[in-house]
Every structure is written in structure tokens, then in C-alpha cells.
Length: 260
Image 1 (cartoon, rainbow, N blue to C red):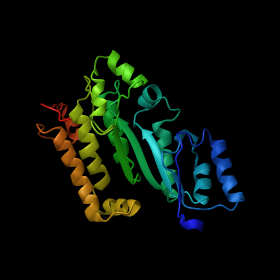
Image 2: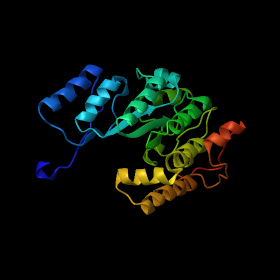
Image 3: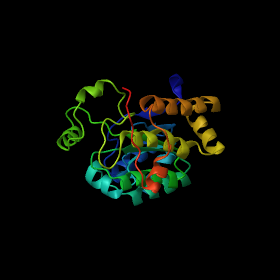
């Protein structure tokens, strides 16, 4: 491309609102003979996507689909996240996108105040079952000052120290626990289940390395660093190192202390 620009990343909280806008955007690019590598960096609104729409976007040069799946549970999507979409629709999107040759990145949020253990494991299962997802990101729900989530957490009596917001990198460490999950369990999903789901095979490691421009040594270092951060925040914890294993055993994982 001119001026040395190789691709374009769009940053927009709501790139499109409906399927009509998806098709209009793709049609405009094609009519103007504008085809270039691109993707929506903050995530594409999934309720707007159909097989036809994805095909049209692929024709314009879009090569990566960042999917804010949020959760693998329909109740969480409807009542806690408030998005007009479903797990079933998300599974169709993964299938369509894979067939069209998209790189697929899934974004998930875990640990909302009213979330249950069953709903957490559904999210883990969704990310793992849909192996066509090339890379899954697990962010821990963080109560930001002035948001509805913070108000609810305070009302439920599970979150009081808002000063902690200045001590932790948001979405990396849980800032409260409920009767359904502990801080360490969310940390296990983010560090250890994340590692198992994304890097369980040589093929997946190599594909991720190619996607982000890293070599395998750098990928292994990122994996090691993630686990070291977990161990720093939860120095007293001693296995098992998988929320799936904990859930299936019917046990709970607790911590003696949390470094912040």
C-alpha cells in the first residue's frame, strides 16, 4: 500500500449495529476498489454477523475476526452482559469464519458478581470445545469506579476496597470473591486453563506465533511469565492447577494470601 501502510486496524466500540451496515460497509469498499488487510481491533459486534456478511467482509481483505464472546452461557450473555446474541449463534460464527479462512480470536470475561461456577465452566468449555478458535483471551471482570458492576459488587458486600483499583493491572487479578468462586479460581482460568486451551499442541503454538509475529521461544516465555505472575499473586496456593479439575472434583480452591 502507499506510504508504507501494510494493513489497517479499526478501533471502535461499536463498529456496526446490524447486518445491513455490515453489508453496506463491505459493498462500499468493493465499489471503491478498496481491498486491503484489516480487522476490528476492539472486537466485532457478533449479533450483526451472518454467513453472507462474513463472506462479504472476507472479500474486502478482512483476515482476522476478534470475537467478544464474553461467556459460554446464554443466561450470562442475556442478563449479565446484556448483548443480543447467544452461544448457539457464536458457534455458527466460529464455523463460518473458519470455513472462510479467518484467524479467530475469542475474548471472554470471567468472574462477574452474579456468575455461577457452572457458568464459569461453560465459558471454559466453549473456548476449548471450539478448537477452531485460534487464540482465547480470558479477562477477569474488574469493578471500575462509577460502573453498574461496582455498584452491584458493593451492594452484595463482596467488594469494598476501591483503592485496590490503583494497585492492580485491571482484568488480570480478581478483586473479590463470592460464594461461587474465589480469586485463585479465576486466576487459574486466566493462567493455567488459558495455557492448556491455547498451547496444548505444537500446531497451536506455531500458529499463534505466526499470528502475532513471535518465535516459539518467545511464546514459551509468555506462557512461563503468565504462570509466574499467578504464583506471585497466590504464593500460598498448591494445586490443582486447573479450574476444570477443581470443578469436576466438586472441590473449591482457596488462598491464604494475595500479593498486591
